Image (cartoon, rainbow, N blue to C red; front, side):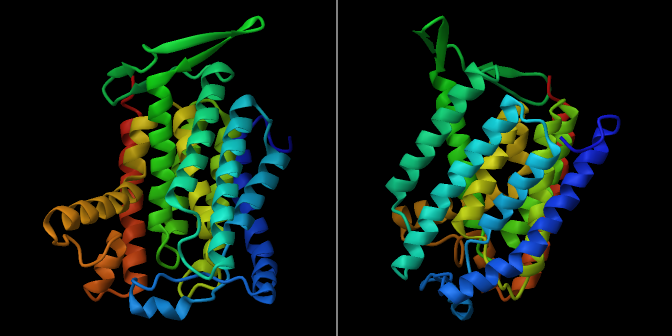
Amino acid sequence: MIGSPTYPTYTVFVAIGLAGVFSIVLMPLFIRLMKREGVGQQIRADGPQRHLTKQGTPTMGGLIILLSVLVTCAILADWTPQLILAVVATMLTGALGLLDDIESVAHARSLGLTPSQKMAGLIAISVGFCLYAVNVCHIAPTISFPGGFSIDLGVLTTEIPIGVHLLKIPWLYLIFVFLLMAGLSNAVNLTDGLDGLAGGCSMVVMLVMAMVAFRFGQLGLAIFAAAFGGACLGFLWYNCYPATIFMGDTGSLALGAAFAALAVLTKTEVTSLVMGGLFITEALSVIIQVVSFKSTGKRVFLMAPLHHHFEKLGWSETKVVIRFWIVSAAFAAAGFALYFQLG
């Protein structure tokens, strides 16, 4: 570990800068590689027409974000079981997103993997993550609410003897963790529809989660979250309008999984939903649109996810992105304030 044990806050700030430098330096090399190999983003035909000009823009920039985080953690952090779990879950989800991106590029369509294939992958990752968290990291299968109220989701637990150890399977908490990880992964993925939108919102949320992890006493997780914030910052240099690289599902799914992993490992499962309120709002807009159209034949929004609705209203892409950044920061601040009300 390279850092300052006397001043751990210094190490967290170094993680932001180091990951940012790795990201901003490596990204141009990756962009050139993607252009040379002809690997470009596939744009939805039913999306805003002005987005069709983005067809062919290099994608899978999430690989550099993940690499920057991994190298930063290797240099600065002690590899505790909690950090190992967060990194493995994130990288596996990123690999799932990478398969989706490769499928999309290979078949020249914006769909990628089927929903059932994605869901199977997310189920496997979230179940493994939850069992490791409970049995190795000793995370309590409970969820806490501001004000000190908590719910025990470990009431239905199966214990399976494995040698001298017991494998605990808290079924209700297992389902909850799956919903949290799959929900946040898909929510960030849905948010990734405008230049700089998902990257900027993720940067804000991850920096707040770094403060949460630091206060929780998990320096390794704080470095992990800070590295994501820094990597997203470096990524934004190339992803801001007009973007020269997209993160792809490789980045968006991994960012959502990292956010969920941090929420579970710092016992902020509920307040994290407030911190990531912008992502939740984007996902809800899609759900509302689909339910409304299938049940009544009418659309609530001009187009979903929500950021496309504002584009349809005539807002410029940069105006939507910057205002969504502001809203995301407000949600993150509100969630951080509620964090101090946890029992």
